[in-house]
Image (cartoon, rainbow, N blue to C red; front, side, top):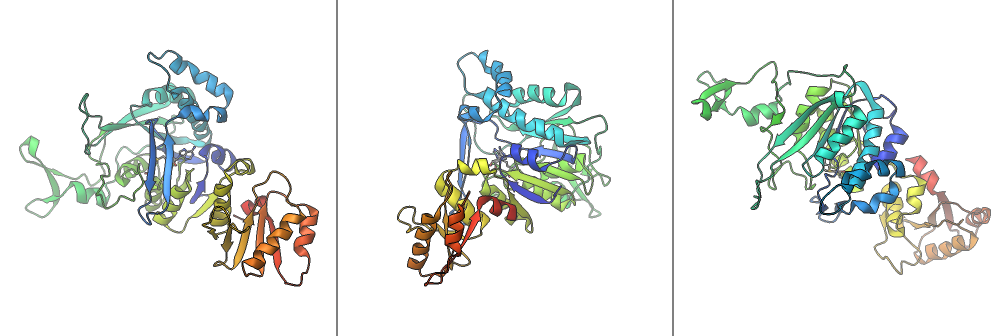
Length: 420
Ligand SMILES: C[S@@+](CC[C@H](N)C(=O)[O-])C[C@H]1O[C@@H](n2cnc3c(N)ncnc32)[C@H](O)[C@@H]1O
């Protein structure tokens, strides 16, 4: 099994396909919270790439969930006073993915599920079912105090992190090593001998020295601020978590060289910390922007596309063409969406035109012939045509020597995916 890798795709299919039973030491996941929001952001690096994920309208995903799992969860909101809002779909969706997490986790492993009030209580019930009530370890309350004040209720300023072990053999470090980052942000004073400490005003200016052999923590964490809008560590990802939070989780529940999995890794906070603390990692995110940013953040990591042929066949044609040309072939997409003259993009520094056919039926000889004309019109001598299947005649046509000496390579989508 590959480690130190980022998979791009739905974590359900990626886990099923690539991650072995009992192979992971620690899982941290920070999925959509059922927040009823649509997250959309322009990526700060270039202000061009748009990132988004939809955390509302969960009913739209009904058709993608195993009907038995969906039925099992339906009761959740049948009893609700005041109408339905699709939470049972959200819980069923999460259940399918958490069942995979349970399968891949080692007996010595544990899992941290980050959530908040929107669905936390329902997730707890579901986690008890999937991991076992007896395996519940903690509900960590992560308190922060960023701006924004509710007027009609107390301001909600905490998230919840549900922690489960897989079995009683779980890895656990009671004393958590203190990183330089934590030391520098939390122990800012010095005593008369120049030793770092912090002062507790509420206890009569009592001096507290940092525990050299590591700190112990209770289940509410109020010493880790969330990332505010001017934080220098902020990458622009709407739901980015602070590294100190992940540092504590990883230090408490794993050892060096262990494998950490984050199936909803966003811009890769857990991945970055895992790498820094000498753990192996597997990150998954459905957003290509998220995967790219993680790659940019930690450097030298391979992104493996996680799409199945079935998923690709139902993708909107422009998105499909972009995925193939940009992500898989490393080329650029023709900015003209209509009237592109049969050229969907180019590879090799704009020297080789590409045409992508997202067709269910076999691509035949006439299409190859038309593409040859488009290549000539574009002023080139080579071209690549991508399709799901090609007829024998189309291969003959592509191989035919013509007076204009244009060569065409036919590539199936399957070949491209296998090349990655
Ligand atoms: C709350 S964000 C995670 C933020 C992350 N903890 C960080 O610090 O950057 C949730 C992420 O889940 C991803 N996501 C949503 N559904 C997914 C799925 N089915 N499989 C994999 N990733 C998914 C979204 O693209 C988003 O990046």
